[in-house]
Amino acid sequence: DAPTASNFIRNVIDEDNRNRKWAGRVETRFPPEPNGYLHIGHAKSICLNFGVARDYGGVCHLRLDDTNPEKESMEYVDSIVEAVRWLGYTWQQGDKNHLYFASDYYEKLYQFAEILIERGKAYVDSQSAEEMRVNRGSLTESGRASPFRSRTPAENLDLFRRMRAGEFAEGEHVLRAKIDMSSPNINMRDPVIYRIRFAHHYRTGDTWCVYPMYDYTHCISDAIEGITHSLCTLEFEDHRPLYDWVLDELAQAGEFKRPLPQQIEFARLNVTYAITSKRKLLQLVTENHVDGWDDPRMPTLVGLRRRGFTPGSIQLFCERIGVSKADSWIDMGVLEQSLRDDLDNVAPRATAVLDPLKLIVDNYPAGSEETCSAPVHPHHPERGSRTFPFSRELWIEREDFDEHPPKGYFRLFPGNKVRLRYGFVIECTGCDKDENGNVVAVHCNYFPDSKSGTEGSNNYKVKGNIHWVSATHAYEAEVRLYDRLFAEPQPDAGGRDYLTVLNPNSKRVVKAFLEPGAAVMNAEDHLQFERHGYFVADKIDSQPGKPVFNRIVSLKDSWGR
Ligand code: ATP
Ligand code: MG
Ligand code: MG
Image (cartoon, rainbow, N blue to C red; front, top):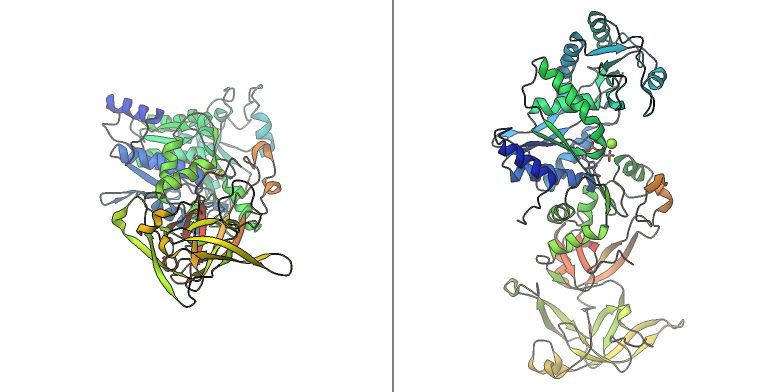
């Protein structure tokens, strides 16, 4: 395991541990709302929360933060559970399963609201939404108290119970915390904590017609579960006083014991050429700009998985980008390099010709064949070798032949010698063309004593080294080559409509020829096609013997093009 970089959050925990604030206990949570699929931004939060819990011998809860009945569903819950597991984390501690749903706390949340009302800390407001907005004031203007702010606890309790009973229409009343209408922090100007919604909830059905607001729900969920450090993104910094206020009031009422969970904010992750907003990703899916949530171009975890990114590469990425208090854009190249670094040492090597051109070895006897071999992995001789046949007709890359080459071109052109990697040295003798002048086949002769791994091979010094597969033995396979989904590094920056900068050439499908061994990979197996990059057998469409490969990344960083 790579050592985990220290960060300011770990410093807080270390300090708490020194002071025995939590008696050494560390309990975090990852709290997604089940209203979409998780994306690479969530991975940062997952790795942080689960990573901290793991390193301090604690536990991280997976909590579905599901208090918006309109947009949530079980499909999203299932995808979230699967994605976090896939990333390699567990919310199981001993025989305790720390999987929670905020909707399981509805009754408790409601009872706590009644307690706040009884203690004069919450009131039912009956202003219109527009009046409330105006009276909340602004950064430069203090708020004004609602005419309903002075309702008595008894009056409020009666109204709130009737809200729950469904006696009022949506928008007729809300419940507000009674804090401070002149606070410089607008979040503290009597925030709404309950609203009326006649909406069906995917778990509680039609049981409720009042639903708690996020700020009220989140801190209470943390306290109910015994969370010690509640890590969230920077946009919640201004909400922290409210988080503390709610818990402090309930602690004063004897409902929670101190110490109370502490909210700590960190910077959101933005990755270039990607979008990290569930709402915008949903739009890409519903408007068919991509082939679903798991389209390999999507920055969702299901998309990254289908593309071929490994859990290890995403964990490595999250370690490398660190955790800070300053928002920034991380280059997509950092994620890709993490994939290379994760796979380089493990992915078996294989040969694929992606843009095939026939090469005919004229002095090799027709109908004959022989075996060539290459290491499974160049740095791991213990993993043995792979074999593939050599014969008279081969496939090579079209770009490895040039009838009229530019200066410095070392690959095939008439009169030049190259090595067929792991095979023989050949000399190009010419090419065949169709009526339009397109090259349709290249001719060469081979040197029988030049075979790689034999003594005679040392007598040949050539500058070019090209890959190939035997035409009669190769497997034909579909290979999907992906490029950036967007043509701009910050697709949605400055409020730009990201749909206007979609890259129209982000997906290219080619027919490729593979060495026979590469055709029997199982779905989600990874390999490196030499010279071309890292590939994965597609999770859905690939079968042993009928392979479909996705290119994950090329061998070199090409994002600076
Ligand atoms: P979105 O805007 O995509 O809907 P969200 O923050 O509303 O994102 P949640 O489901 O509430 O989505 O997110 C769960 C957790 O993941 C939260 O704690 C949130 O702060 C964190 N998170 C979401 N996006 C990012 C990101 N880009 N970088 C780091 N953490 C993130
Ligand atoms: Mg959210
Ligand atoms: Mg959101």
